[in-house]
Length: 242
Image (cartoon, rainbow, N blue to C red; front, side):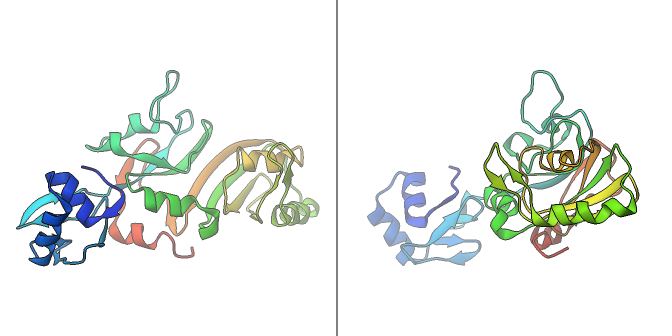
């Protein structure tokens, strides 16, 4: 049985097809453990990745998986697509069909894509409330001269109104690298947001690459199309300020 968030007594009862009364007796006898600790609390809450045992026998031991992928241009962030290769097609992982994509990139955008089966982690990453920064390397068609730089920077920080969604974007931070390349730091991900923001200056984006999410940077050793598992420290520290 796969669960996300439930009471321990309910999980045991449904898993073993026994009454709550029988479960409570087991709890009182300290026969049930969660993550190696004996539990006797009736309302104890467990999640999908809690290691649950009864008399030393495992009832649930789901493993959380976290991967980074270097997405190439021309690959879609989807599980199935009839026209293009998907990020799932690129992954060689035994649990790849259990994974979901954390923050999608469009077809012509490359860079860091995260995948996991831990919905709590992915929801926290994508929530604007947690203010997890995403950094992008942007290449624009028309050169931006010194006189124009500040107007770009100010407009991104102020936010732009998108009439179709009736929203104003959160402050975004722009760093000029050279006349054609800039780094943009966002805390949200509206539809084609970066391309639309540069579109206000009639300056088309010709290349877009995500460099990082939170404190996690794309591994420089990963070639386009390659992926690897995240370390425990990378999973836990991604919410730290970069």
